[in-house]
Image (tube, rainbow over all chains, first blue to last red; front, side):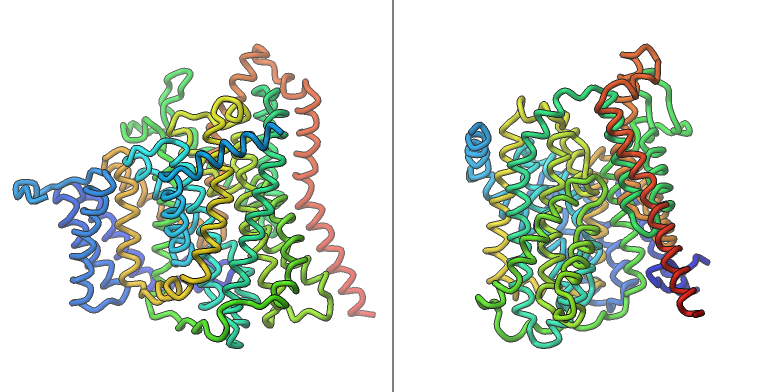
Length: 95
Length: 506
């Protein structure tokens, strides 16, 4: 385990390590699915996982994930001109 | 009178409707970014670079956006310090010392307004300093050759470690890692692939947006895992929302002193806002003597770090604009943004692109005015943002970070690289290495290398060129002084301990 540093950061407990590993797994999943699934589905899955990891309840987390998935796509792809991959939603041509 | 004329021209740029809206948006975003945990000025600014690029903003508008976000962060950082006792970023740590006790005594409103006022004065003093000193420094720096630049950067790096205070070795190691990372990619002169391990994704080097967001955002998200439970509730900002004349007058001298001090620390490479706020707090505490109630809610203890904070944020623009050398992690990121626009920062910028330089300087005034106007009536809105729980905040930050990284090259390779850098940054943080030193090393590394090479090609490979001019010799002397500083400090601390031990025995 890592040492506590001078600022008195707590030692990494077993539970902490588990959380860090889950968080990294989620990030890696987002990176792997980003282009394959497209931004919206992968962001929804990722946000749901992260919200749960940070202690959100299922339903609010799901609502948040859906809002973030669609909202960020609209904000960045449509308003701010940052192109994001459409992935599996491309055939729908709704966006 | 040249300066005044240029400044007028700058205001013409800064007050154009587009740039004014940009400054307004930037200060609002900056304030929010500053008060949220997990986002500081460094990653706030880095996140906006791809957006500024995608929107096709002209360089002066992009710089105005980034600078106003930077200033906004210094204003926003104080809100969570005062009401939650949680500094939004390192430079706001000193603000908690007297800010939080004031809020608990029911003087939250006064604390918030007087700290906003202090930030304003600090920003104004430092911006005036920029107007006075930046053109002078730029005129002088025009005569710098590559050897002088190289020595200047060596000085900046030694400064970083020498000023770091308690952990010079860790800072030096962090800078060295940054320098190493800056070598990755195709060498521009010889075409050799360096440290790419056969990966095409690394051939272009590590993009600094990827490095910054990995180091700061991803590692911060991992740090936040330790605080998944509900944090302590914010103290309600109650009572009078505005300080009265007497309170304002009682801190005015503190404001002036800390503003000048913050400006000076802001100019020094590597020192930055964190050191400036700490030093000004200490010196005000000494000046106040036994009459002060520092640590228990003294208004001067709140005003000093806040003034110094925003003064150093503005002051750090001086080395960036005149020499092209970043004075802080955030200006390092802004410098990276400038190079994306193919603008080489440095003294010639003052002659060749006065619109950019003076537009930016004038926008510092504009942003400060917007911030003070915005911060006093809108404080309730901002404090409400504080109560957004982490489970909604962190997914949003993580997604925005990923978009920012993806936007640079539109490859997922960068996302994986960001995660790897994030893990590395997390471990570094856990071990107490300063990440901003690493970032400065990374930004300085590329510039140092090209300047050294240019110098050596002038001198035909002889290192003597580094000792040839009075300027390089002067810089060598400064380097030696800075290098000796941590040793001298260690020696003094040891002697003090020894003396104390002798006294205890006697």
